[in-house]
Amino acid sequence: MSAKQVIPLPLPLHPHSRRRAEGKTRSFSLHFLTIQRVLTMTKTTKTTATTQRDLYAEVTNKIIGLIEQGVAPWRRTWSQYGLARNYATGHIYSGINMVLMNMTLHPIPYFMSFNQIQEKGGRIRKGAKAEMVIYFNVYYKDGQDNTLSKETAAAMHRAGQDVQILKFIKYYNVFNVADIEGIEFEIPEIQLKANDQIEACDRIIREMPKRPKIETINANSAFYAPVPDIVNMPDIRQFDSPEAFYATFFHELAHSTGHASRLAREAILNPSKFGTERYSQEELIAEMAASFLCASVQIDYDEITENSAAYLAGWLKVLKEDSRFIFKAAAEAQKAADFILGKRAEE
Image (cartoon, rainbow, N blue to C red; front, side, top):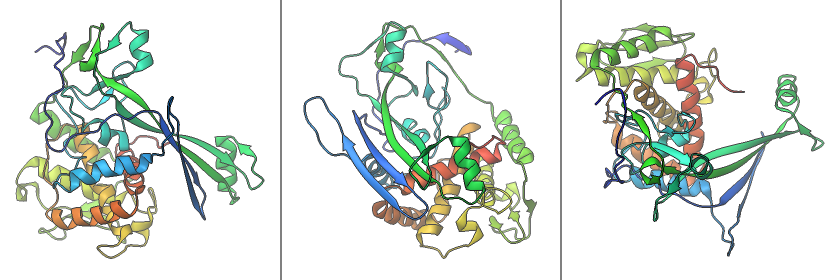
């Protein structure tokens, strides 16, 4: 197949057991977040009826369902057509949407909104199901409940003043290109050769900003040591495959982004014991960040760490107790991956 050509789009196939994100319709939650307190309100609007829904719980339950099957849904989040994206804009989904949009039924992970389809003269196939893209509207207020601009809020925060952050969790529907009629799609195949993949991995490691020291103090273990700020990595020949080596390397580099000189995550600044929520969240951040990096270079690494059963059990426990856990972990994982890739983090 050439690098870019017009191809017939298949209907959705039977999924691999780990991939599913059903589309939902018209609801949102209002999330007030302050340093001292979290207050959540949920409101749902429909044309004919009003029912309550919790987007946090819906997404979390999807993730829980897959993990209970022994599957980490953030693994192997790429296909021969690249990462899931909006076809009209080319935007590649990130954070929690990278997980959701890459685990759908569709073999070609390209999507469009209803308005984008109409603008291009297309129509939605009868019986098609929408997928849900999560986003947040963010507002800032001072102690007197005055609305602030993002820049003013940042300046006040740097000055040590209290700033209230109001986050509105929302979503909009998108449809896969296989469910869209009346538009002739050009779908490029994006496939790196093995040598290109290895070079891309090496380049990520080599060009990481503020990179920690990389040493082999212990040839039998891969780990990140926060105090000396060192990533310990065994030789690549000790791993079953280059993919396993680089996935592990990315995992440890993700931990290192929590150092005070980088993103300053609490779990790295003040480490917790195995099994605690903070420990579980930090491991999930590193796991997801490594998967995001693997996806960026099309590394096919579908196994979990050697402690997979213990990690999965730990994540399940916290996910069931805190429906916002996966959102927080995905956001921090995206920050970690972006830091390693040298991308400027958003304020």
